[in-house]
Length: 340
Image (cartoon, rainbow, N blue to C red):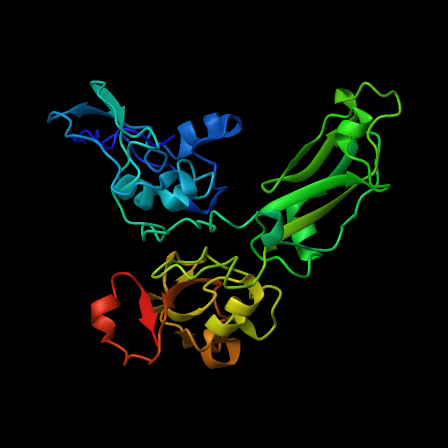
């Protein structure tokens, strides 16, 4: 858990990340025990593992809002929500520490994920099942000598509704649950379905499992508009597989496909070249990065070079009745934000 935000200190200069893209890994990179050795070796600064000395007494540590308990279950652990919980839910998330030595949480160089992302808070009166839209069942693999698996990346490719699933369900091909059969499986949104024969009491090993993903229904009741909230980074196409260059959804296309910003308008976007590690305006490429176009980069416009790969994220503005004129590029250049 990220902690120690109630004490001010200075991290040692020797504490750095060995790799520059820690923010692109799984959301629980910094909390999952399975990733401990990897994060300690490669992402110390990003995950707040740098020890710092206390330079001032801790101020009073309280929550700015009274309903932290109503937000997503991973409010206190998801790296995407770090700025939101530090600013609003310190006490609820256990971020008040008085020890003399605490982890550092401030990176020495900016990364594209430092903008506050507000976690989704469903209406308390809405049942989760009522707001879940289930995709089709996917069963791509049959059990082999080691067991059965349905990797999450493959499941997403064969799902037609959910871009950003919030739930996953795993059952046998005949409709039974693992509990019904007394089998031990893992079934989560990070890895998908995994069943190992070596962990089963049944001499026949793992059953054949299928998986389906659940996402929020695209209704104002289930997906309320959260003003100034940012979507996750989206990277659906790649120049290696898209012959014309690179293209990512426009703001309107992303709204319809994901249910993000229901009742609002995609008013701002950020575009980041994953090949170069810079915002689009620093790449020197001829391309578009706007809420109306999304990402459009044509190889023909950049001949003899080809387009680099881009990812995009979208910002929601609620209750917009008129489109504001664009502000100057200089005002948003450092953040890479481009508006309608």
